Length: 509
View 1 (tube, rainbow, N blue to C red):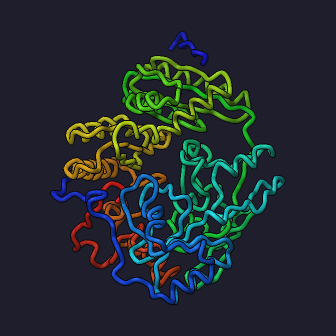
View 2 (cartoon, rainbow, N blue to C red):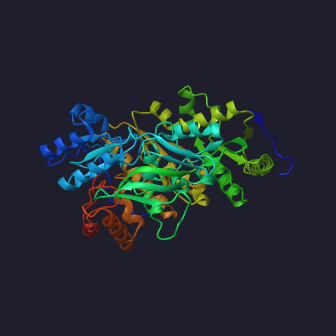
View 3 (cartoon, rainbow, N blue to C red):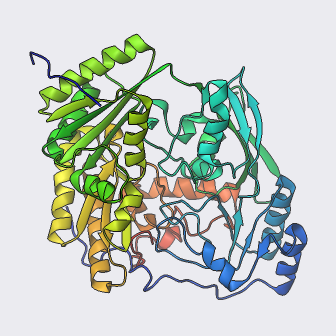
C-alpha cells in the first residue's frame, strides 16, 4: 500500500412498534393444505426427486439469508425447463395455490420465502448461460446462474457484468432481477435494472411473455423496468438478456482513514459535489473493522481509524489518475488521517474481500444480525449517521455501519440475541425509528434489499393512497388471483390499510 502525501495547499413516535420478535412469533402455517391431487400432479411435472415435500428437507427453505421471518412451504419444486415452469404455474392457478420464486435464498427482506399454504419454485437447476454475444455485448442466462460465475465466464473475453452485490458469489441473477440488486459499483454502473435488456417471463395463466429487447427500447411502455424489482409478484422469469461492458483498462483503489464518521461522510459529499464519479465509494466504521480483523480476513484496514472510505476509479489511465488526484486532495481537505493507494491487484483484492465479507464477520459479535437497508440524500449523511448511533445507544444496542456512501444507501447492522425477547423488542423499535429518521431526511425505504415483508407495513409512510392504489392495480393486471408471492411488497387489503392495526413483524419479519 502506497501512502499518498497531503498536497502542499491545501419525529412522531408510535407506542406500538411495527414488527414482532423473530423466532418467537413467526412460523405461519396454512389453514388449508392443497389436495393430494395437487401434489400428485406436481410430482408428475418434475419427478419425485425435484418435488420436495418432506418436512425435514423443507426446513432448508423456510427462511432467506439472515432473516428471521419463517414460513415452511408445503412443497419446494426445482424445475429444469421453461415448460416445467409453465406447467407448475398453470397447476397452481387451477388449484389456487400461492407460489414464490426463489434463487439462492440470499434475499434480506423476506421476499424469497413462501406464503402460508404456498410452494417455492426454486431455480438452482436452471443455471445455464445460454448465449454470450461478445460482438454485441450481451449475454442470455437462465435465472439460476450465480452472479460471480457469469463474471468468471466473461473475463477471458474482456467483458464484465457490472452489478456486483456483496453476495455475488452465492446470489443468482434471477434473484438480482427480482430485487433490483445493487452493489458497491452501482454508483457509476447502475443497479441490476441498468444492465437488463430483456426478460422471458411466465405469466399467471401460464403464457410466456417476452419483455424488452436485446437492442434496447423498442417503443411502448417500459414493462422491463416494471418487472425488475417487482420481487416476483408479477410472474416467474425464466431467461434474462443482460448488457455487458468491457473490463476497464485501469482500476485504482484508495483507502482514506478518518477520526470520526461525520468527517468521512462530509468528504463523500465534497467528492460528489466536485463532479467526480468514482466507480465505488464505500464506508465502514470502527466496529466493522474490528469484526473483520477478528475474523482473520486481513482486510488491511487501519484498526485505529473510526471510519474508512474505500474509493475506486475505473476507465482510461489518464482520466482515472486525474480523478484520483483530485479526490486525494479533497480527502485531505476533509481532515483524513491518511490516504493510501493500493499498489497492485493483490492489495485491491484484499481490500474488497474485507468490504464484501463485512456482513459475515458480524457473526462474531452476536448470534443474530439485523441488516437494515435505507437511503438518505448524500448531503444528509453527516447528520443522519450520528442520529442512528444515538438511537441504538438509547436502546442499548450494538451497532456497526458499512454502507454505499456514494449513494447514501445505508446498512445499519444491529447485532443482538434473538433468544432474548426484550432485546428483540428494542431491535424492532430501533429499526422503526431509523426508517422514520431516514424518510424524514428525504430518503427512501430501500436501496437494494427490497420491501418483501420486512418493510411491508412501512409502505404507507412513503407512498400516499393514490400511489398505493396504482401499484395494486398494476399487480392485479398481471395476477388477478394474487398467487405470485402474495403478502409481499404491498400491504393488503388496501381498503383497510389505514384502519387496521399494524401487523407485528420483527427484524427481517
